[in-house]
Length: 376
Figure 1 (tube, one colour):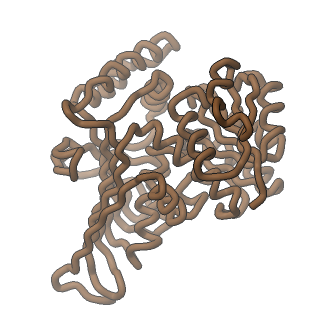
Figure 2 (figure 1 turned 30 degrees about the horizontal axis):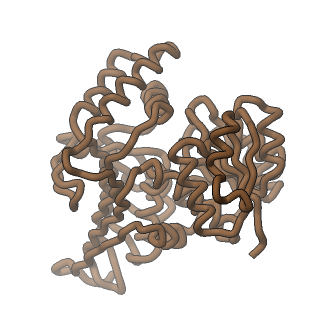
Figure 3 (figure 1 turned 60 degrees about the vertical axis):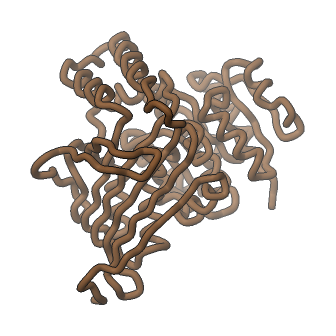
């Protein structure tokens, strides 16, 4: 396989550091690390000096960014806050003709990049955003089930639970999403469209260990809706959950009081969220879990499938691993045709899940035939 130069921005953070280690461990590619602190960048390559180099670069400096991207065969962006970086790295990659993977990104970045869709395609480039845990794996996992496990899904519900470290950049991005009113609360996807849920807006649900019993809240993103449309899933629900109710209450308070009008308010709200996420379940190690229930057809029979995808570690590290695996798949030619995509449509969901399982992700499932079910 041809050796490529993989550029990673933001490697001094937990997410970028995990992306770096994943590329080192699972590929023979060379690395170019980018960031503002030369000493920290140098430390990242200790023991692996023969595999790469580093370059001082500020993502808000167009000249430095262009120079960095021009030296790479593919760029993974782990720098943040994503709501401030927006399309800066993507545009630099486009101008230099380099494929791009963003661990963050959302529908706003997606719409920005779609304005340059023709240019991206004309240069034969693949841009993939939302290549992290949520959004990202939250769509890849059900897409995997649709591709590999069931011939047709009639109804699907997906639960997210986790515990891990939380950064100020991540909290800042959440506050900006509250301001932008990203996604739809108390909603589900029906026939590809957003539908409000009638009745109680949350439910108590017992997830597999280590999550256990949690209050879960329905929320819908454009990425999840697009995944449901792509795989012709008539009814799809996504439920988020939190370590404790204080986190959700903080979200509600920020939105109700509009504590995001100024940059100072955004920073203050981000710090308040950070404190809420610092409280963890006693005696529970960090983990990231998606639990899926689906009904549908398999080999002509009507079945119910329950499946759990579990990573016994910090969700930030997992995000970096996902972005690195997506970039690796692209370098091996496993991506979609040129264009801009969310992760679940940009690479094979089956190939990505199988690659992640090599990185100690656990996948369990149980399939049972539905009474009275049969072929159609």
